[in-house]
Amino acid sequence: MSTLKVVSSKLAAEIDKELMGPQIGFTLQQLMELAGFSVAQAVCRQFPLKGKTEAERGKHVFVIVGPGNNGGDGLVCARHLKLFGYNPIVYYPKRSERTEFYKQLVHQLNFFKVPVLSQDEGNWLDYLKPEKTLCIVDAIFGFSYKPPMREPFKGIVEELCKLQDRIPIVSVDVPTGWDVDKGPISQPAINPAVLVSLTVPKPCSTYIREKHTAHYVGGRFIPRDFANKYGFEPFGYESTDQILKL
Ligand SMILES: NC(=O)C1=CN([C@@H]2O[C@H](COP(=O)(O)OP(=O)(O)OC[C@H]3O[C@@H](n4cnc5c(N)ncnc54)[C@H](OP(=O)(O)O)[C@@H]3O)[C@@H](O)[C@H]2O)[C@H](O)CC1
Ligand SMILES: [K+]
Image 1 (cartoon, helix red, strand yellow):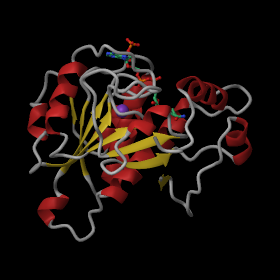
Image 2: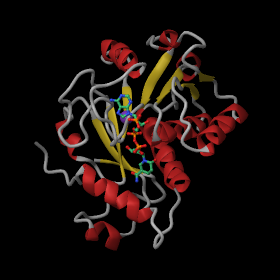
Image 3: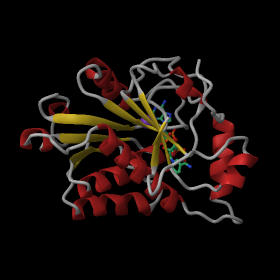
């Protein structure tokens, strides 16, 4: 097991609560924007378009979006990817009813002409082909996932598991299906090629196969004294980067 500094799911939830509490006053929307922006940067770093043929550049980044805030990070990420010159397409099978904000994120994707597929529209399996898709962003579940996985996500993740050795998967914060503290203890569970931990890695990140999975931290929104209060050092992000490869 690596010596990576991690915080438990309980502490991660406390960090979020304090960041969005009355004294600090971040909004969820602000943190989600920075989280999704970080994930888009990680995709660019890991799969640069520079030097690629036109056919390669035209491939899709297939962003699969879940019903909670992990999904929200995916919606934001898709918009930034479009601005970065990628060709994102979003699959959003169960739309969040939590707040109006999710609808606004979808309107923004429409504005950017990023297709958003619903469960009953279009054949999402068409995008699980290496000749069509550069990588998949797994924004299905993050730190609030509790097994067993329910449909439609169970079927979706099972399909992803079949092809994850042929199309790289970029997982947002927690690989979908993993227990945030104990890792891949139930099935189905994704084995990502890239993990982007947000704010600070969660304990499950110590279970990634280090040679197989590139690990980034993103979500650059806390000062040193706040990190120290929660028992970790801030990450050494360079310049204006929103991600750091660990
Ligand atoms: N500070 C930060 O680092 C930030 C992180 N962000 C991201 O937010 C997620 C955590 O978001 P949260 O909304 O708390 O939870 P999830 O997105 O992980 O999942 C909740 C939804 O998933 C459904 N769920 C849970 N278990 C199952 C299951 N077994 N089968 C099917 N569906 C499931 C759950 O549905 P319920 O009906 O159970 O409520 C929810 O709909 C974190 O990981 C980061 O990615 C934020 O962007 C803010 C900044
Ligand atoms: K995820």
